[in-house]
Length: 245
Image: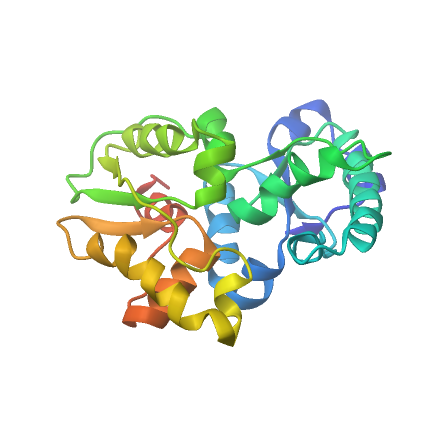
């Protein structure tokens, strides 16, 4: 793993660029779920790709959620400028957490003066690089996707199903509502009871069905752990487990 910089990326040959990615870090997987970040890096290496880590910079998502639009605009302009410089070197950008990654193609695009390059979701990137392999004979899995991912990129859940199919695994997408965390809402003490009620109306009824439940969103996984003490895996961790070395 190497820190991404324009000089380092420009030194790559065309062949090396095709086998490299820039991982755009988010606060959740960098600071609170570092093993997931490491799992993605290991998977990329297993697939023959070198990972460059974009220097961490808060993308301003909480500022937008809380209505601090002026401060958010400044963060968006700063980050988009940095990301565009990296993307212009011809190496794809990939993010991990859906809510944090989709900021670049949703909220950023509404800020005047922002020209942000595409930042791929993990499954979007895997659809381009993951080879098909024989079925390992493993159990079935169920996907409980993040609300932002389902609404802003409707194809995202189908893409995860296709990624799993490539390594011989079955993945079914659960029809779920909000987990109750809803961005920063569920983290606030005054909203805890309502957050729990929302969780019990949908997610709580799906967790104990046949097949391992997987969750793409950090907020969803943290909500499940808070409410049930269960730790759900990210789909990436299953892909890493079964992808051929």
